[in-house]
Image (cartoon, each protein chain N blue to C red):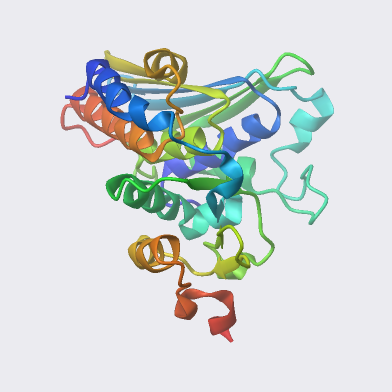
Length: 122
Length: 185
């Protein structure tokens, strides 16, 4: 069973890295739409999948966060990825299964996964 | 409708975040003897006027200006009442809001509680500057997850770090399993 002692251990592991972190302006932002429409369509497992994948790969400078209704409820769950110096990419009808490809191709290698974007939905 | 109660909790707790609540408590208590699953979301946000409280369960009332429907609270209320339960909001301006939904635990129409660990980490990960408390009990066995306690241990390591969120998620999942002791909640 997980205990708080394990959290203290995790802190020790992570503390050395904390000092190396630079300002959040250089972070890649992953924003999940989490209004009622997004939640009902399955946004929470998508958010969890991003957090788990980023954690598993121990990626730095990636911020996974949420916003309200993005305005295209029929295309939820919607995820917007903004990498520094790049245009915002909007992924639609997201599932946890799509997350690992977006993390590896887009977040790590900087190449958006075109087939999951809103533009590919026409 | 939401497929699991934890999603209703996430949706309603986000209202607490929007209301400026510094500490939001999610209290879940399953009682097999009384055949009740009672869920409260207790916040220290700005609260509501009696008029707002009366309107908030109406799906065509919302504080949003982008469109005229607000389904979060009505969904939660309907889910509880479908199981022979009840729903209640206590609130006053400046005094925070407590939303309580009581479900019939063994009722055929009661949705499963679902992934409460996922709901909690979704809240913490997206509002790491705020505090959240999960109080969970099932037939007398209980545990608490409190971000203030986690924060104290973490020092200058942020709650929103993905590795920390993964820990919190596992912490809740394992403790809950122990409390549930095989019961399907």
